[in-house]
Amino acid sequence: MYRIKTLNKISPAGLSVLDQNRFAVSGDVENEDGILVRSADMHDYVFPDALRAVARAGAGTNNIPIDRCSEAGIVVFNTPGANANAVKELAVCALLLASRKITQGVEWVKAQAAAGEDVEKVVEKGKSQFVGPELNGKVLGVIGLGAIGVQVANIATKLGMTVYGYDPFLSVDGALALSRMVHRAMDLETIYKNCDYITVHVPQTAETKGMLNEDAFHMMKGGVRILNLARGGLVNDDDMLAALDSGKVACYVTDFPNAKIMGGRNVVAIPHLGASTPESEENCAVMAAQQLRDYLENGNIVNSVNLPTLVQPWSGVCRLCIIHRNVPGAIANITGVLSKDGVNVENMTNKSKKDYAYTVVDVGSRVSDSVADEIRALDGVLRVRLLNH
Ligand SMILES: NC(=O)C1=CN([C@@H]2O[C@H](COP(=O)(O)OP(=O)(O)OC[C@H]3O[C@@H](n4cnc5c(N)ncnc54)[C@H](O)[C@@H]3O)[C@@H](O)[C@H]2O)C=CC1
Ligand SMILES: O=C(O)CCC(=O)C(=O)O
Image 1 (cartoon, rainbow, N blue to C red):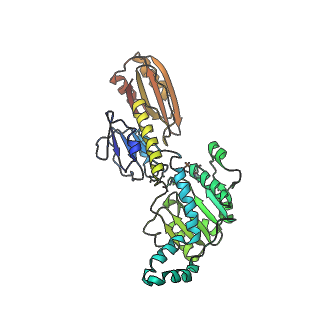
Image 2 (spheres, rainbow, N blue to C red; image 1 turned 45 degrees about the horizontal axis):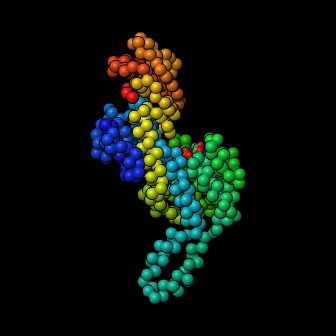
Image 3 (tube, rainbow, N blue to C red; image 1 turned 180 degrees about the horizontal axis):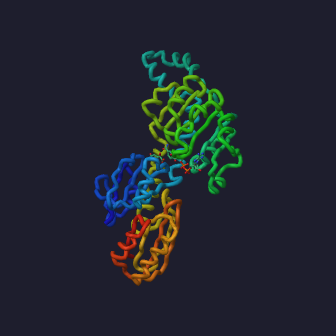
């Protein structure tokens, strides 16, 4: 029985992927083999000995201590694209929120209740303060053309916008999915200098943290409208508040309110609703649970952010799953132990991702724990699992 701990509310459709006869799933299990998480901050999480995998039902993994997981031989999964449509739809909404003073108008209407029967007259008289521009004919810059950015860029062309997209790491899939109407920007300056609206869809990393700062605002057009449905940390809040105060930024729509930014002038703060649709929650949960199950039961890895993709059909009766450093001699050391102990390899795959590698070895006979222990003791080996078919 595998123990799975949920650190956030996970859609029942995802939980149903984990058969109750083989998986005990709850928020209270201890010494868990796997974790299902959404946005819970895991940076101070103490890993129990049994923990082998963390599945993030969503895209961003900045809430997970990836380096610490890698060093402990823990596989971290996410669910690329599973919530992209939900975020794209909220981005369309955010474009309108950034333009049309809808939230400000709605708040104002609520405050007019005292006018009683006269409210219609009051509304017609006061509405001119909420005039805002149309999207048609304006220029949008999309930073990050991944699962979400591509969809946002494509749909914006259908709203009559001229769209520039910037992504120095654009994938082949991203390029194929991108509308030919979207102009590729080769640098951020092109986005900053030309766009009336800018939307960010990049992960929060050491490189992207605080990228929307004073220097960036300096290059932008006066009255630019900025959308951030990606991560709060991408924006330098002090610089943003100053840019809002000066009018350089006309509106900032963020899905990531914090104490500093939420009171800012012309800030529209949404409570992290980008992926909060039943469809997206279900897609993410199902994908995360399937990936977690396949790893725990079969050792297969798909959509991991710290380890390579490796799917090997079963052959033989026993499988060794070895996470190790990506260094010369690692595979020779493993096969050396197997041949010394007389274990015949039926099938073997090795894949690497940056500093880490994963080797799956299928053998035709049962392997004793002592063989696994010998491999565990090898230099650079981080985790060894023995699975029986
Ligand atoms: N508000 C919400 O609820 C949600 C927020 N997100 C956030 O949106 C981010 C993007 O999500 P996806 O599009 O699904 O991820 P993705 O991984 O498909 O796309 C990210 C894209 O950003 C690009 N990129 C990375 N560094 C860059 C840089 N310095 N400049 C320009 N482009 C860069 C990558 O090449 C990639 O194409 C996530 O990392 C997450 O933080 C994602 C889903 C829901
Ligand atoms: O699970 C959520 O609601 C947050 C989704 C998100 O931010 C992400 O997928 O990166």
